[in-house]
Length: 358
Image: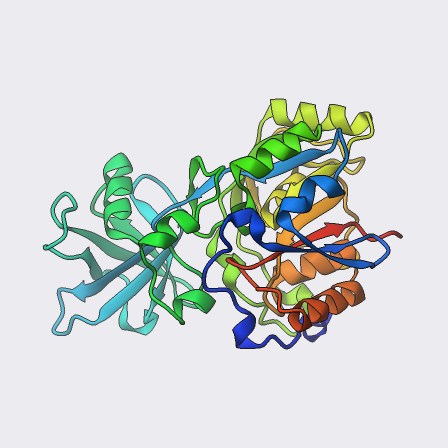
């Protein structure tokens, strides 16, 4: 499909720079299967679900993947910014760097500074290889847990560019950019639909007879990137590692056999469930990378309802929600949200999407 079909106008003032407080006080636009729109709050979620429905959340934890340093060992030492996007082994990461043109294979980068307490006060990495569009392979001087600690000490949460360009990250973001389910470190972006949850909302869901399950998908930096190809067939997704346990798969399959619906909290949960599902919708144990790219025409196997935030124009995520609820419906829903003052993107409001009726 043509990428420009997924474009829309968004006023800069619609982009949320801070989350709602409490988190479940965010607004929620309900998009029903027949395209009817309802204005609600996230705290109303239990009222839109039924006993026996199965809520699936992503328990990935965002690491402090944003590092700032300088190239060393040459006449000039330009500032280098790196965002870690994929662990390769105990000491190597793939990263997106700026400015990439200042680096060559074999260059050394020193992250941090001697005035900050982090083992030796800084962290060195060698540029092992360069790829396309600012992607490099970094080989760090530390390994394993020592490297993880150094990254945690010297890095910052990698706020999305549309927030970071308007304000600097601060201590509030360290908590705001993690979901209450965050447990397994490895993401470089938050599964943002999960940011709306509070213990009170979880308790209300459980009291309503809705079960909650956890899976893990380590969200990569590709979630920030618009599709640059003129046609969706020319876009290649970044692979992300995910895990669905045998116990979770069995419980979801049993509930669905009894008439329960699967409710994915976030596009990350949906993408992993669809990756783990057989053509008949049966969910299997999964422990692998997925680069599933969902566009209109995709036949959903596992997920019946999706809670998600409002996404970037021309992004793979807007393509996904358009596949789920229909492109015309989602364009109308987004126009309604803009006109109604909904807050967009990672710290913004939510949509509750019921799969389009065929």
